[in-house]
Amino acid sequence: MRRLEMLSNTIFGVAMTLLAYDLPKASSFANAPDWTEVVRVYAQPVIALTISFVVAGLFWFSHHRRLAVAPEAGRGVVFLNLFFLLSIIILPVTNGLYGVYRLDGVVAVIYGFHLLVIATLNAVLWILALRGRRDPQLLATALFPVFVFALGIVAAFAAPRVAQFVWCLAFLAPFAGWLAARRAG
Image (tube, rainbow, N blue to C red; front, top):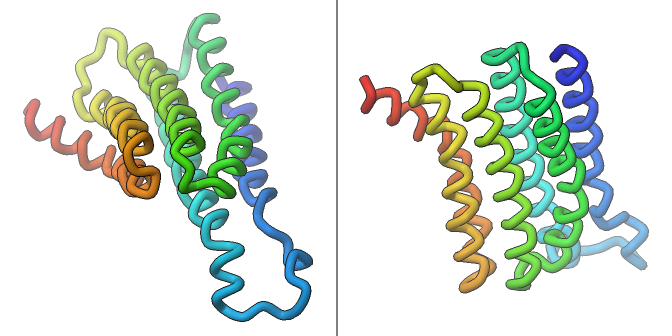
């Protein structure tokens, strides 16, 4: 699992760095821009980058916690981890699309679906890591983003502008885990 941890650190690091690749370059301005022009050009891409970076960071943290909880795994779990890492590698692609067309319903749904895939793979890996253990806190923390991102997709269909705020609720996953642990016990 140590090799998987090193691979995942590299993949997360590269993917999180590539999120900034689609930011507009300073050369896109003919002259020195005023504040309104800077906001007009940079607002959407920076919002998308921020959401994607924080999401990737949270999943990186979750991934490391999961590897600590289950330091050994079979071939199937390793392959599932590779699919999880593939979903992280693709994040700069959907982030770039979302950064340019954030308020478009189809693009918001595509981006939300990608977040849902990442969260679902992470949750399945947690379920496998916790097999045979009863830990409602870790399980709730892993499952909460799945429900939030699914709800965000529904919001993206109806109101793409609202979806970004729904997706940010996924950051409450540790609180959901805390509530689950408290309720269990």
